Length: 447
Image (cartoon, rainbow, N blue to C red):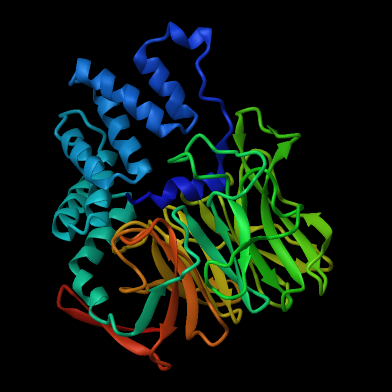
C-alpha cells in the first residue's frame, strides 16, 4: 500500500496527540458527529469507517462522500480515492475543488489523459487558480519528461525499513535521516494519523555504510518522545539546524491541541556532542517551521512553514544571519511558491535550490524541482523529470557539492517513503525541448 506523503509531511508541520478512546459524551453522538471528531483529530482510518456507514444510509450525502474520498487520499489508497472522487464529481452541486483533487489523483495513478481533461475543466471554472493551468499544460508535455530516463542511475538503499524513511542528510561520511520505523523504545508513541501499529513517532537515525546497520541519532536534545526532524548540518558538520515539537511536559502548547514544530540551532563537537542550543527567534506556537537547509557558511537559511501571510499551504522562506542574529524570514516569492505546498528546500553551493512541490506542473503528487538563485532572485523552477520524479510523491532531494551524486525519498511502488540513491551519468547540461502551441523553448537543466 502506498502512503500519501502529504499526511506524513503535514505531521511535520502539525500533528495530534488526541486519544482515540471513547468517552460517555461520544457514545450518544451520531455516527456523522463521531466521524467529524475523528477526522478533526487526524484519525483518518477511524473517520473513514464511520463516514462509510453514514454514506451507506444516505447516498445523497455529499459531505460524507467528500470525506470518504479525502480519507482515502490521505491514507494513500489511490484506487479507492479515484473511485470516490469519480463519484463525487457527479453531484450537481459539487465544489469545483473536487475536480482539481480528482485530476490530481488521476495524475498520481498515471492516467495523464484523464487528468489533463479534469485540470482543464476545473480551470475553466476557476481561472484564478493558476495551478490548474500549469498542470494541464504539463500533462500535454508529459512524454518529454519521461524520455531521458538514462540520465540518472537510481537504486533503493538497503537501510530502508517497512515504515517511512526520508529526509536524508550527509553527515560524517554517512547519512542522517528521518524514520517512523519501529525501534526499541521503552514507551511506544504514535500520532493519530499513524497507518499501523508499527509506525512510531518520527525520529532521526544515522548510518555510516548505507545498509541496514542503523542507529538512533544519539542526542536527547534532538530526538525526543515525539516527532523530530528533518535535520540540516552546516559549517562542515560542526553546526546543526533541527526541528522539534512545541510540547511542554508532553502536552501541546497551543490551545488547538495541535502540535507544531519549531526550529533550533546547535553546535556539534568532534565527539558529536551538542551544545549552545538556540531557538530560531521567529518560532511561534500558532504555526510550524520545519525542513531547514543552511548554507555551509551558516549565513543563509531556507525552511518550509505554514505561517500566516503565505502564498499557499506551506511556503519556502529565507532568513539571513547578520550581525550575530537571524533576520526576519522572507517569503521567496511566486517563482518558487504556489497555491499548493512547497517542502524540503535544499541549497547547493549557495546558487541552486532544490525543493518539492505539488503546485507546479508535475508527473503526479509531489515532484522534485530546482531553481538557480542569485541573492534574493530565483529563476523559473524546472521539473527534474523521470526517473527522479514519478507519478507518486518524490521529495527531500539532496545533492553533494559536485551535483553528480545524491539521495531522495519516494513512495513509488517498491516501498513506503523509501530513500533512493542517485548517480548522474552526465556532467554537462542537457537540453529539453518543450513543444507547446507551435513554439519551442530550450531550457538548461543541471544534472
